[in-house]
Amino acid sequence: MSASIRARLEAVHRRILALDRLQRLAWLVAAGVGLVLVAVGVDWLVSWTMAVRLALLGTGLVLFTRALRSIIERCWRQAPSCVSTARRIEQVEPSMRGLLASALEFDNDSSSDGLKQAVVRQAREKFLAVEPLRRVRHAPAGRALLAMSTLLLAAGAWVARAPDGALV
Image: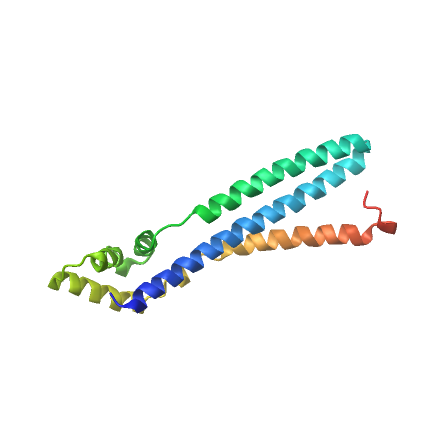
């Protein structure tokens, strides 16, 4: 198989992983900022003592750190192979059904067969003709970034509006 089809498949693979990681990280930051805003609002309503505030802050930090660690580790451990990415492209691209993953597997096979070479050639032609990145959904990552930005702006407005640096 030509290096261009493998390189292009790996580029699609990297782009999908980057979007997934960006989406997870943005939701995590948005959730953290949202929880801080809720905690500050509840503290303002209830007027807890400093000991209760510190206990809740410590508990919140421990829980948020564990959530952050598990989500980040899970996200970075996720390493689908190029063959699984090829199969996913085949699912969403009707002209590639069963062709791209077969060509990748035939490329790893050392024997040279006319049928294998024909499959690889046909896969190369069809894959270079399609645009797999146009099928990747960018909206979930965009919504996550929008939520994160909105909550960060709300927190910034709250801090800027506070008189004399008093946040609560």
